[in-house]
Image (tube, rainbow, N blue to C red; front, side, top):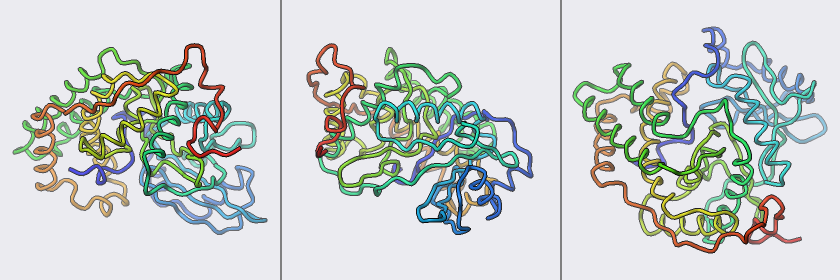
Length: 370
């Protein structure tokens, strides 16, 4: 069960917004050019009429060409997942990070001052285009720089909770997801009890790993596809899955499982993190249970969106006997093996009294030049 096949989106297991009408769902599935351009104009932009749909399954995202040159990004949120309050909480966190000097992609203010608009029942927002590309080959120094970046996000994230956003824990990721899959009869009967047992074993392991671990606002979906690198600076994209969770949630997705390369990469990330904030080694006990929890959560995410015409072609094997046999066997293997720990050496914490929010880009990035 490869992480590469698990995609980049997670789902809380809740329909937090109001249930969308069939008409709103269909409109979202097949957004028309007129709606995209009307929303861009309403956002105060001057589109040329040319745009490109970007790669996103959860939401609908477009790069829109603007008069006079340049582009903007328009994001239309999937109806029924987040309500306006929850999207505004995401945007508030982004603006808070941006104000603290953390390199993120913050939304544009729309006419009237809000960052969220609505058109025919669909929430949307606008962003400026940020420079950089998704990083491919990452060195140990890169991973350390990313660790410092994650620490800077968490330094802001712990200032206040996100009351309207879901927790990143065993109940949300595993128990609710498994209950949905089993309750809908999506897991074939021959695998149902085995899958139920493996999912609960995963949930118990995650409960145990997170016992006593502090929770705060985290990105929630911190993988390479949500990073831009311009040769000097890493910038973080897409806080759509942000919620209240452990620091380890933003560490594990960047690395391969518990093999020598993955452990070395994780040690570099955590070493960079520890140069700004504490990260006790026991927190890494959550890495492999979180990885397994995502397998269950991701299956439920696909299942909940199976009416979306984009999903059957993106996941042609989902729901087959072979799919569930592999999912069940791999989860059972992880539970049986006891989720091997991901160990990183302790390093001295940040000197007492030093505030990470006062550090500069030169402190965050290994090759920053003034």
